[in-house]
Length: 482
Image (cartoon, rainbow, N blue to C red; front, top):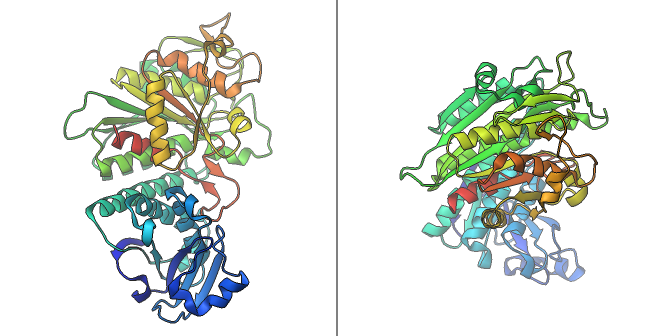
């Protein structure tokens, strides 16, 4: 699908459908012939109200889709992103091949154009790659964002939105794959192909190399599966060398049964999404390569399959992490933190001065924040402020969570340096973050627990069911605004 930015009068565009946004109390002059629909309340401008009109006088497009934008004062870039995605999803199954989305008046600014580009690409994506009859068989061929004037700033914003939107869809393509087709080795192959296509250097650490290095925490999780583990490392170096070095760490458990501490069977099929953090990191590196931020960025994606095989680690096993610290594994379903700490230590060894990790880590964060916001933890308030600022620009909802030393107290262990879970279930997202903090040291670090936000179980007006790519856009904006 071709996504374009054009400056034109949307009424004169020869296209299958033109999309217009109407706010509450508004009345578009080009729809004067439909005053009776306004009068009757059929067109009210309420949020996500859709009115499809055919052969509108004075408009060249075959169809006009009028989309309710809600109250004008609430129509910010995040809202436009959702509206653009919803409009595409509403009309793309109606036999249209070309669509023009008009951003006129105050909506023609750079932030709105960037958001619309991301929304369109988010809305066009479908999780039906393995269906014999796909929605893409009747795909839209081109979508234009129409603005009054294409300035250099608006053109740059469009390109940025397009790059980030495409990268998010790459991460969704990866994350939606079933675990029989996306093993750690296959994930490594896909990451390598993406990196090499973008001119990035890539290294894949295999089991032998990780054994030599002493990554016992990661290898302990992997030992119950026939599928070999990997550590994917992708490097971006800016043209002008940077003093700082940002490390992006993404959990990639391609399937998580829970191991010996096995999960309930109900809902276990969703554990193919336990690698969404890693998929977001890989996609972010594609966008970073194209947008060229001023800071060096290296991605670290530890990938395993967590299975209850005959060689699986047991509750009470003690493993030695890459940092040298020993860990008593009290629950094999608390595996994500084990693979992350070896990746975090490796990132520190390679010179990363700042670290961000993303992981579908705990069900406890879903209890705390539901399916709306990702939980954010940190050891450095200044770095967290920079990260949260990037999340707001990215239209990705994050919420800061506590990480007091009291949470670390709950991880003290008699038999090893630390245990991988606390003694009680309360505050589980906080104690999981406290576990990671013990391995981070003084390096400025942010942890994103996206277990409640990485995928959606039911389609939304602007998004299909499945993975959503969070927090890829925040990663990219963090690097760009360094």
